[in-house]
Image (cartoon, rainbow, N blue to C red):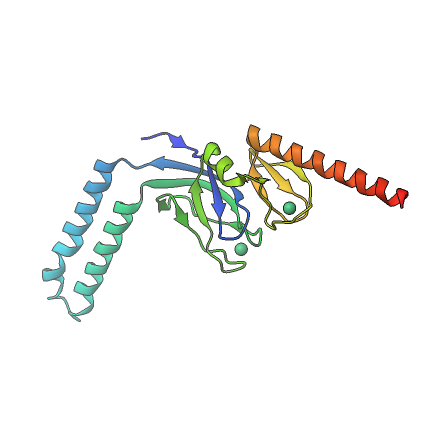
Length: 201
Ligand SMILES: [Zn+2]
Ligand SMILES: [Zn+2]
């Protein structure tokens, strides 16, 4: 039995800030998956010519063909068996579910029953997130000219930097923290200057 792994994952949806997720999975080694795939095909497809003799004849071969295909597909693609999962829809914040025992690969697409969008559960690397979140103009907001300020948030053991105005959210890496602090400081200075200007005129 393989140990339960907990890969770093988050939920993403186009044009929305990523949202936190926690996942516990058991890796299913390739030889076992191949064996189960072959076995389900051999068994269910193999009985097709025989079950056709049972009345009412036609449903049985179709049924065993489909069952064999379905099981083979599940065993072949299910790289991980899910032990536990918790995640929030990036769009409507509703809790998403993957039932324990389900077999998935990553990235894995889920359906949100709150907003009917399909967020994707995917692994991430902090270094890569840093590149996405920061460009030449600094740490990225959802709206280009957003003047909101950044604060730190923590959920399910993941640390985030979030904008209080546009809802942008990034993983809190050292470089992004520094960029966010920088931007907050610049915002504060601009605010002070504006305030002084108001008194001068
Ligand atoms: Zn949703
Ligand atoms: Zn913002």
